[in-house]
Length: 376
Image 1 (cartoon, rainbow, N blue to C red):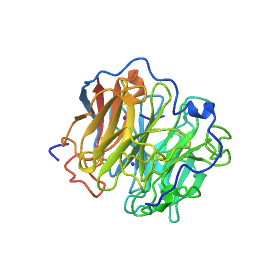
Image 2 (image 1 turned 90 degrees about the vertical axis):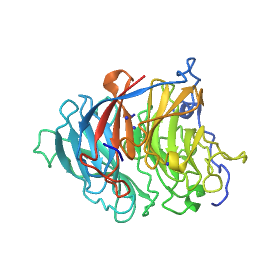
Image 3 (image 1 turned 45 degrees about the horizontal axis):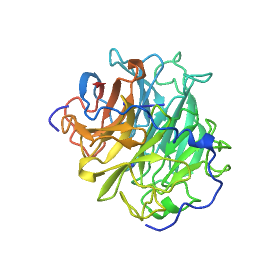
Image 4 (image 1 turned 180 degrees about the vertical axis):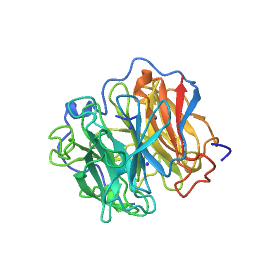
C-alpha cells in the first residue's frame, strides 16, 4: 500500500426449490419499476477527509441520526463511536460471546431505521463458539464509556460458521425488515440446501421472526440462496436489493436480489447458461475486486474491494448497468472493507472503511481508517 459508505449498509446442483410464489408486496423490496433516469456513464470520487485513524480490524459501520458513526472491530469484539467532525473514538463496550478466528468475529452492525426504536438498539452479526448469530443490544450513551451496551438479546442463531465464508453483513431494508448475508462456511453444498442457513440472504422482522409475507416461504427467513459468501447489501431508490459476493478463483459478483431466486453457487460462478440460476448483473476477476461492502449513491452502486484495493462504481438505470464499471483509489488506501452512504449529504457522500489490519493487508502508520468521500 502506498499510503494510507450505504447503511439502512460475497457444488452441488439444485433448482429454485419449492415454496409459495413470493407476493408482490415482497417483491417491492427487491424489484419495483425501473427508474426513468440513468446514472451518468462517468462519475468521480474525491477523498474529502480522513475522519479517524488507528482502528484495529474494523468491519461494520453504522451512521447515527446525529451524524456520528458506530464501527465494529472484528478481532476484539468492540464497538466504537466515532465523532464525524473530530474523529474522536469512544468505546461503547465489548460484545460478549464473540469468538474471533479466520474471517470470523464481530462483523456487521446496524441500527434500526427512524422510528420508535431508533437510537436505542444496536444490532450485530458475530461468530460465536458454535455458530454465527444476530443479536441486539440496548445502547445507552448516558452511561460511562465502555459500559454503554446492554446484554445481547439473541435475534437469530444457528447460521453455520467456519474459518472462512461467514458472511456477516446486516442492514435494515426500506420495508423495515432486517436482512443478513451469510456464507456457506466453506461447504458449498450448504448454499443449495434449502434447510441450511448457509449461503443465503435472510429476511426477518427486527425480532428475528419470519415476516409472514414477502419471503418465498411464510414460515422461513430464507429470502434467496445459492450464494457463496454475501458481503454487501444495499437498496436503490426504487427499493431494489443489491448484494456483492465473493467468488472462488474466477468471478466475483454484483447481484440484483429477488425473493425465491437461486444464484447458482457452487454449480455456477459468475454468469452461466443454466436457466435455473440467476446471473450476476456485473462480474469481476477476483484479483480486481474480492468485494465487501456496497452502497448506493448518485444512481450508482459503489463497491469496496479487498484484494482489488479499489472502489468500484457501477452506474445503473433500473436494474441494469448503463456503462462499464469505473474503479477509483486503486492501491492508494489498501484493502477496502465497507462503504456506506452518508445520509447527511442528501445521497452525495460516502463513508469508506479500510481493512489493512485484518491479517491479509500490509498496514502502515494510521491504518486502519475511515474516510469521507464526495461523489459526483
